Image (tube, rainbow, N blue to C red; front, side, top):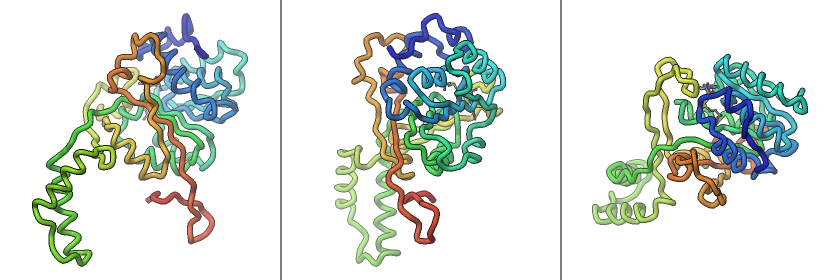
Length: 290
Ligand SMILES: C[S@@+](CC[C@H](N)C(=O)[O-])C[C@H]1O[C@@H](n2cnc3c(N)ncnc32)[C@H](O)[C@@H]1O
């Protein structure tokens, strides 16, 4: 292991799944095995909590880390923890802020790599966050979060096919609405190839906002995206993305990593696709940034 949390201060400063084996493997798979995204890079760690992954990134050679964390007590723990590693002095900062606000005030190119670990499913601003990350244009965006279950959504897809077929006649000059057998055939071919035709899902749920790892929104409202939605949004905002296959990481001890093993939690590494120069001149824009 490149980062070892055994007996570390991070086991005492948090009760949010602060288990040695879990932290070690998350640091290994999400950070140590992405050296191009970490070594010598300026990193932004969203929801930095007690500084656990800021520490891991510095340990793996990050140039600097800025952590953003909404809870004052966690910011204090992060500083307390990182001060015990004098070798990292001057290379980290923790800012008490709502990450959504922070992102919207961050200039483009301010960071090389943005980490978004364990927070995406505690937000309701998933689209906004990805839009802002794209605008900031880091070289790498690493996302790790709980995901909602996939669903075939057969009836929704059927309705979508029907509506598209009607729109093609009314708005695009097509001669006739597709027959029911034709629509059924399209539905079946889409269902047989869910990789091509994904159905994104955002499930809104409540959690107790008083918990240390929870949303900071008083209502406790949060939203779980399914993996398809995450990939659809990354594609929409012009990222190339690759899911990190946890089952292919040679994890030797799965204790406290049950969610990665079952697929209830997933991770991706994404990079902005090449930018297209705006015809209005000046500002580079991604294909679908609206
Ligand atoms: C489940 S913990 C994840 C910590 C760490 N990133 C990890 O993956 O282990 C979520 C953290 O996000 C913080 N948080 C929740 N909502 C936030 C928001 N809107 N902006 C910044 N931090 C937030 C919580 O205080 C908590 O420290």
